[in-house]
Image (cartoon, rainbow, N blue to C red; front, side, top):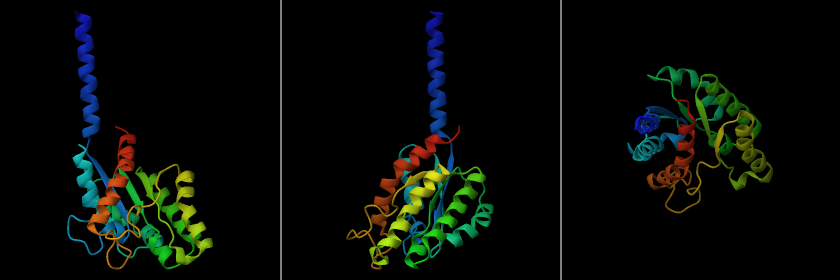
Length: 212
């Protein structure tokens, strides 16, 4: 009898600890450009609020902070990490780094973008923040050589820095009718819903990998 009671108590304790781990409050920083910022969208329609809603619907106690700045290149993102974090009440547990699209659209060197992103990843890691890198793909009109070099930088960075990679932030949205604004670059609210649905499993894996 005592053995059964001990087993029951142990099981209840395990369930309690598991639930506590799942319910632990987490902060996610969405660190990017206009794709993250929610360009021309109303409050609640952007990436951060939609991701927060999706994660909370799965029972996660999370706050997703929008740290997207329209027009930002990787160099500008690198330059604002310190002062951006200073304004937060708590250090984020996880950062989603979504940068590089503006470098690509301006035809800037993939090698320079890679170096900047490498510095960004290392900076966040040094601060104890887990990193999920969101990749981007070059537009075809930039040529095969540029596309090859640019597209390869994200997987290479993820491997070198041992961070998770979401291969293409605009997956399911780029060049899909109704998923982008009239400029053909930025996602509509519906497009961002697609992005959030696709990236959420990656975010959940990173949340689960965080120390208790």
